Length: 315
Image (cartoon, rainbow, N blue to C red):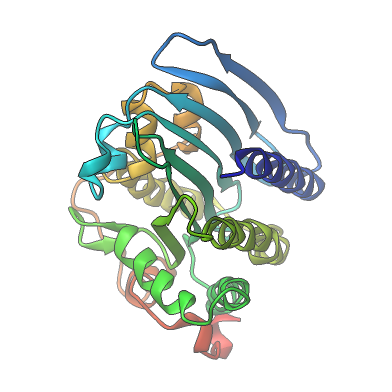
């Protein structure tokens, strides 16, 4: 297990993404480095990069963390009960971007590595990650571009991965209590294990590099296409309402949030993904035939976006 190579890649990825987003927004991200001293539940370090009130991005966080802990939390062992109680090492880059303009979708991306270090047994390393898109106003061209970029990135590794990881994403980012998807999906994988000494470490590491390196190409063209669109109070109000679904998923279902909180992680960094303005309404539904209603009828359902041709209405 070459954890230093993974760390070096993740820090470089974080900087590349932040630099590109700063170029679009015109404003700088702040940097907040932190360290956990040895002897506590966690030790390690991280770097949180954040923008708030930008010209394009209302709030965005691109976090790097690298920690070691004495005991794997329950959220990390639910599929591997034999590793319960083992020490662990975890590192990753996680980002969530909430744009100002309601016509620009929110995006999430995460790539990570975990290593369980059971006493008297070989280390078990696994990788996870993915990216998904959460539009407020749907455009088929955007969804198609996002999914095609994801598919191209994975095809370099294995052409069978995209269909599997797309379905995994649709299933994972689903609000069971609402019976609706969070957005239009993307790709997601978790618990991609490579036993130490099996030769699979390079494959797992290559997989998270493929996902991380594809992010800017998947998202920035959409931002550049939509951020100049005119919008008003109606669109911002709907954006705030739909952001409520994002909060619900992160706090109720997201394993990454649970892992961070259960392991004693840094709360400010964990909850950086929360949008700055959110609304909830009781039993509300959009009027039929409106752009808001079309988000539900046309976009918040699984579709084979990478193979679809956009219609003229949604270009």
